Length: 151
Image (cartoon, rainbow, N blue to C red; front, side, top):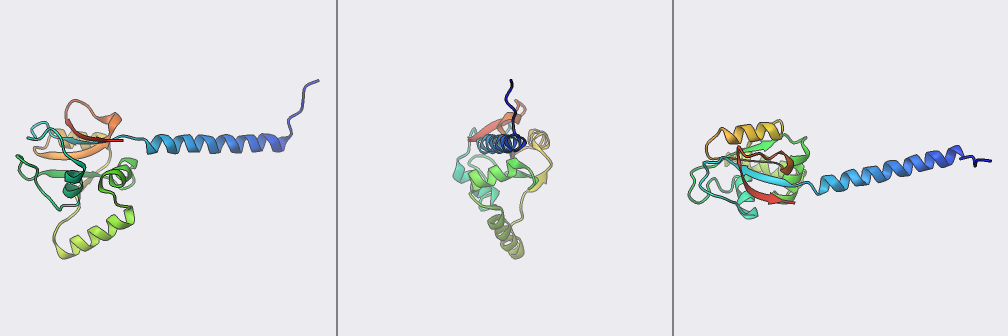
């Protein structure tokens, strides 16, 4: 005689399974690696968290030995954008929105141009002198140089 599984137990099991799968997905996203990349002609081999934050907030426009650095952002809907600003710039989306509203209103600076995805950022950085951007660590290839990796 085989035991019968009550329908309510199956639903409970499926709900628990979905919750566990969601937690695993969130955990893997939270551990994503963000890499700041640069054009191979950049005179620097690395940047610090502090330098990156100042560059992307347009509080600094240059790095030692380079000229004016050209930056690119990812679209706000991309997970890499969220991870970059959370881990490196240390600003929530609402704080970032308020910051850029204030800075652009006064005419001091404007946010970097946005690109659609990692591939677009890599292509632009590889083909633009003094360019920097950021991508998910799994997307980096040898057409650009790694300047900073943050887990």
